[in-house]
Length: 174
Image 1: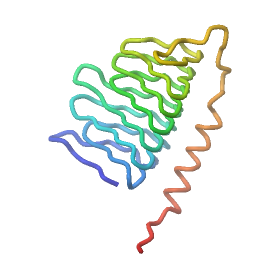
Image 2: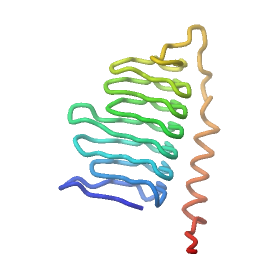
Image 3: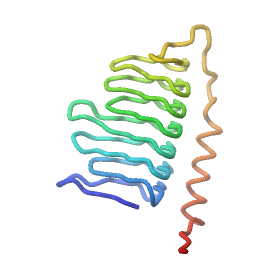
């Protein structure tokens, strides 16, 4: 996998995490136990820091970046879908950031919240815990509380998938 130091900043990847060989991790990035980072995802901790919590999946094509004044903190048991962009934001534990969505600088997504596919969470916006945010810009869907444990299946499936890929993935030449 392409891992890069940037000056004195080196990625810190837990030995039980899985980072696909086609993902790129640069600089001040910490990846927790049983987390997974999938093909073509890029985590670039150049001006600030990125933290990916344990059992969190960062799926294919996702871009995670930060700024010098706004780190990107992704909690534990988070599912970050395909082709997501997160920059300088905080994502609470057990949240789901659905495919194609964008979470921008200073935004906070609360624990257990869901950002729907294609939604754009504006800079400095706050998505309360266990709510669903939809649209461009993302707005909380009133009267719809996300059930506790709603993302557990996705989290568990990606933890298992990371273990399987670590054990079984092999590159074929040809």
